[in-house]
Image 1 (cartoon, rainbow, N blue to C red):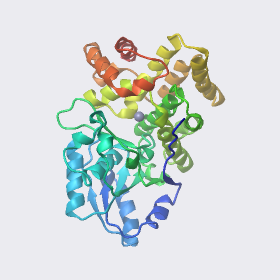
Image 2: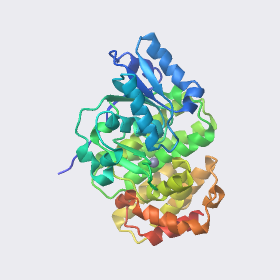
Image 3: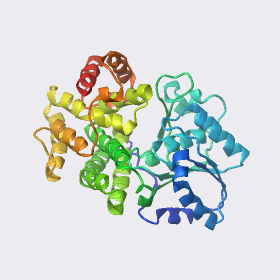
Length: 380
Ligand SMILES: [Zn+2]
């Protein structure tokens, strides 16, 4: 017996925002975003369309890049004060994560901690929640089709996860014109996050042929379009394909993620490193670890299939880990955790946190804390 969940209504391509706005039926929206997006005018692009249709809204633009509990509390306060009825997240993963948890906060009592996954919080998410619409402004997290949200609660030293099937946005909007202004280094880092989602979903050792099919096509799209879009951010076709591949990665990773994400999460939590960059800096070394492990034929085939995609894209090196290393480097990402202020003395703590992270439960093979230490050491 298997349970497959596939995502939500998706509006994709140029004109997607207009099409979405035309579906709105007068509920007042709380727009959840960050100050940076507001400053560059992306929020104005959306509100201009809302104004045209006479849709009312309030704006919370205080989301932090690595969101904290206070973001949710402030957003929920505005939601209540302004009598909002639905949420519209405009952003990358951070604003969407905050909006998802605001959904919980405005419809459930008590501290947010009670609804976190490690407190079996999903079982307490029982009340009706407001609708959430999500406009993606980066192609990476795929949070617009995700059922989980991550913030740091007060007094916590790790990221706290909230999960519930009803946290998935009701409509996800993939409008490439929202991502054309992203600078190459953010395009590269977020693109590698999407790459990692597809890759880890494909490698996760569970039966999920639908997720597998999506993950492989997601990888193929990224190998084709990420180099194009890093070189030419104005390429609207490549921007659209990257948004789709990112959404596919997050759709596929309901199958599971793996050790790369467990290695990446502490780098963001402790050193505030960008999530996509964190993945990029450790991914080839995690793949190298897998290549050197004793794998059965099925596991080897999983790795070989990814290398085959590199070959088809004309990007293969001798081994998969070398292909990944060269691909990431070609996007302008400089390897070396030490360049990010991380020293050998930090690796013990990082490995502890990586081992405590849940993602590696779905890794191709089991990993222990020493394995994490060894991979960090190579990535240093
Ligand atoms: Zn990720």
